[in-house]
Structure formats: structure tokens, C-alpha cells
Amino acid sequence: MAQRIMILLRFLARFYFLNAKRLRLRFKHQQRQVVHGLRRRRNRWYRLVRNRWHRVVERSGDRVGRIKRKIGRRFRRLHKAIQHVWIAVGVAFVRVASPELRAAAVDGLLEEPVVVDTPHGAIRFFAHGRLSYGRATKLMAKEPDSLKWIDQMEDGGVLWDIGANIGTLTLYAARRETLKIWSFEPAASNYYNLAANCELNGYSKQVTCLQIGFSNHREIGLLNTSQFALGGSFSFKGFSKRKDFAGWQAVELWTIDEFIRSFGVPCPNYIKIDVPGLQNEILAGAEETLSRPELKQLQIETQETGRGGRHIIPLLKQRGFEISHRQMRYHKDSAPVQRDLVFSRVS
Image (tube, rainbow, N blue to C red):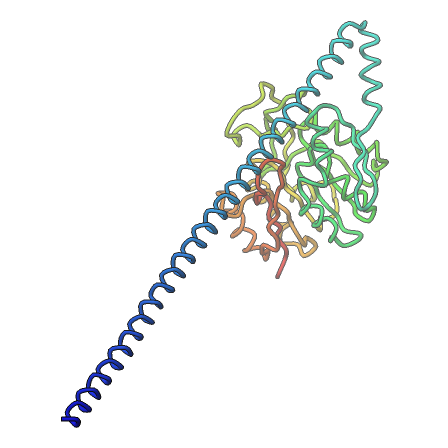
């Protein structure tokens, strides 16, 4: 009897300890599940707070950026409005004055040139009108790549500036005082500014200014222009997509090859062409010059992917020129755009 009781007690003890172990394991498993669940909730809450915080920061940054841009636009508008007020006041005073005093006031204002500082020294511009003033003051900011191109030219080189306008790049090149410059501008109003700026800086001998244009044959062309828009960009009849000006001006057009042969001028080492709509015709009239080894580089206002670029690139490649640099134009309220290509002789 005692032996049976001992077996029963052993069985009950074993059963108890096994169940207790199983219960402990189940409790630990449930405890782990609870802990993992709490951790997952905590991590989910952390991610939620972090994402919401990031969104708040991004939205705040965008909102601050929009506010800054809006404030900047309003300040610019306010600045322009103040300028218009001063202009209106000045014009009113001038209109009240007698014709003699009015002419004297204009002469007095034109005697004060616009001074632009460059790495080679200060350049003075005859700022006759808003367009001329804008071109002069934006010299260092609008076309920095063109200035770098001029800086790397070899001393003693000959630069042709075809389509010089008021002479911003011409004067920058002349300020180096180691280049011989031929500057061509067909528009009478811009040529007046070009010659005046060269005289103002003492470069009348270093810079040869000519009021002619270039094309693929010699003729008298018609330039859509205005003598009251000094510093404007004008186009020839038949090469303009739009007519912005009511006036027309007759211009003598040459080919580059014929001009060099007729007057015995030295072959240029560098040519800058900035003539809207006439780039292809100018190059067609320069076949001999493009083949001469003296010509090292050309800078042409054309877009690489545009219609003009698709025609000019293979034409110059046949003459031994390849694109060496793509130059950008920088404007205040827009992203920089590729406007000029520099071609260098490779063969």
C-alpha cells in the first residue's frame, strides 16, 4: 500500500512540475509578445511623429521660401515704382524748363558716364537710355563665359566683334590693351554708342569701329530698327520672326572674304558673331577665311540643339573646327541658358 502511495505521489509531483514548467514557458512567451507589441507600437509612434515632423519642417521651409520670394517681388516692384516716381518728377521739371535749359540738362546728364569695374580696370560707358545703361551695368554678370573667352586670347591677337551693339565685349577686350579689335555694328543708334564709348575710354585707335554688316553676298540690306531704342537688338528684313520697330535703315552688307581682300585687313584670329538670324549667311560668306590657319576660334550666338546649331556645327566641322565650350547667359529672374558656342580649330 505504501509503495502505491509513493508511486502516486511521484506521478502527481511530476505532473505538477511539468505543468508548472509549461505554464512558465507560456507566460514567458506571452510576456515576450506583450513586450514586442509595445515596442512595435512605440516604434510606430516614433515613425509617425518623425514623419509628421519632417512634413511640418518641409512645409515650413516651402512656406518660408514662398514668403521670401513674395517679399522679394514686392520689394522689386516697390523699387521700380520709386524709380518711376523719380523719373516722372525729373521729366516734369525738364518739361517745365525752357528748350535751352532742357538741352543743357540733357548734355549735363550725358557727361556723367556709367563706370563698371573689371579685373583689367574700370570701363566707362556712355549710358544714353535704359537699354544702354542695362547692357553696361550687366557686363560682368550676364556673360561671364564670354569674358573668360576673351581673357584666354593670346596677346597680339586680332578680334572681330561682329554685332558689337554698344561695345560691351569690345571695350572689355580693349581693356586688356594687348589685342587689336575690329568692331562692326550696322545699326546707326548702336554704332553711335559704340564709337562714343571707345572715345570715352581712349580706345579710338586700338578699336576700329565700322558701321557695316556681313552676309553671304554684297548688297544693301534693310535693318528693322529704331533710332530711339539705343542699345536694342535689331534684325534684318527677311531674317526676323517679328517686327518690333516701325523704322527701317539701309545697311551696306559685305562678305567677310571680300572685305578682307578689298581692304587688305589682317585675318582675324578670333571672331565673335552675335547677329540674330544671319549667322549661317555670315559663315557662308567666309569660306576662305575659315580655311586660313590664322583663324583659331569663333564664338557664335546659337543653341546647340536649335536649328541654327544643327546647321553651323557640321559646317564648321568640315573646316576643322570643333565645339570647345558651351557658354551660358545668366539672367536675374531665370535659370542660365546655353546661348553661345565656342569653336576651336583642331586641324
